[in-house]
Length: 225
Ligand SMILES: Cc1cc2nc3c(=O)[nH]c(=O)nc-3n(C[C@H](O)[C@H](O)[C@H](O)COP(=O)(O)OP(=O)(O)OC[C@H]3O[C@@H](n4cnc5c(N)ncnc54)[C@H](O)[C@@H]3O)c2cc1C
Image (cartoon, rainbow, N blue to C red):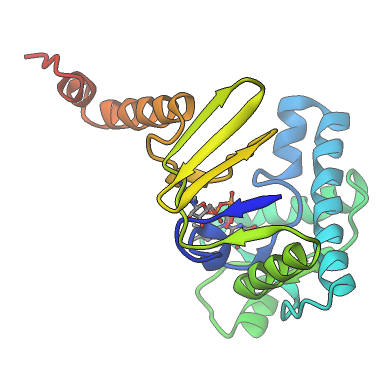
């Protein structure tokens, strides 16, 4: 396996994120339940729990010191959100079999946080915080030990499929492989036409909504007057 990286490992989001090991998906489980039903919402929640467990186990098994700090607080910056936080703790325990979230009133929140700016919140003792760059470096070490060839400072400049192979060009040479996994996050630019078009369209659409329909037309050379 060959892995190429434009700059240094961790140069993108993986090296500079907040290190929060989130419980569940980005949306609260009860919101996903409202949209997809309990069994699908539970499956999505369980998937995220597996990912959390995998990360902790992977780091431990490979002696990657990720500075794991247990505990996570989510706090309400408006009084009207407090009831949702209270309900969330109960729903997680009773409907999603996750007993680690407890509700905090304003007093407990202030004591734990050292700030009186918040109205309450939840405390999750089933998750925590890691050092993202240590995870990136440790993962690179494990990959190299497993035989992967790693090349930093090596941007892919083109990807061509032909004759059942994929050829990835870089300024330093070409990689020929059976398969190519593109994992460039939002930094791919025009590297790959399908997602490049997708990104541009979404960006233009968002700008268009914000600018009352003028932006997309102007950007596409069709200015509406
Ligand atoms: C500010 C911030 C805070 C975040 N906080 C959290 C958090 O607390 N918890 C959490 O779970 N998630 C968090 N996230 C999200 C999380 O960091 C990302 O979802 C995750 O790191 C994405 O990983 P990735 O491997 O897909 O992309 P990245 O880590 O961005 O990696 C993509 C890599 O591709 C390289 N690349 C780009 N183009 C090319 C090319 N042509 N050739 C070769 N290499 C190329 C880039 O240099 C980059 O290193 C946060 C994200 C941000 C931005």
